Image 1 (cartoon, helix red, strand yellow):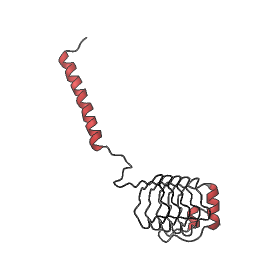
Image 2 (cartoon, helix red, strand yellow):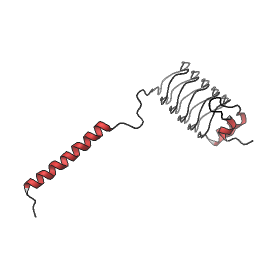
Image 3 (cartoon, one colour):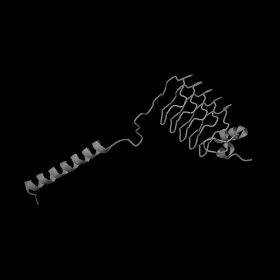
Image 4 (cartoon, one colour):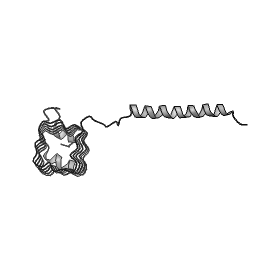
Length: 173
C-alpha cells in the first residue's frame, strides 16, 4: 500500500521542522554546567613568588603550575583545580580551598594555617613540613599515610569555621 505523495511530503516536512526546532533549542539554551564568566587558567605556568593574596580565584585552574613561594593568603580558591601543582613553601594562610581538586600536589613546607579545605580532594599529595595549624579538613579526601602524618602535628581551631583541626582530620586521641 502506497501513501499519497502529499502525505509523504507533509510527514517529511514535519520531521524536518522537528529537527530544526530541536537544533534551535540546543543552540539557544545550551551552556556547559561548569561554565563561569571569568574562569582563570594558569595551567603549566610559572607563578613562583607571585602575590595572589585576598584575590577571588574561584574555580581557577592551576594544573601543573609552578607556585613555589607564591602568596595565596586569604584568597578565595573554592573549586580550584591544583592537580600536579607545586606549592612548595607557598603561603595559603586563611585561603578558602573548599571543594578544590588538589590531586598530586606538593604542599611541602607550605603554610596552610587557618586554611579551609572542606570537601577538597587531596589524594597523592605531599604535606611534609606543612604548617596546618587551624586548618579545616572536614570531608577532605586524603591518603591514609598523609592522614596519619597530619594527625601527628594537627593542632588549633579554624577561626572561620570553628572546627578543631584534629577533629576535621578524624584523628584519634
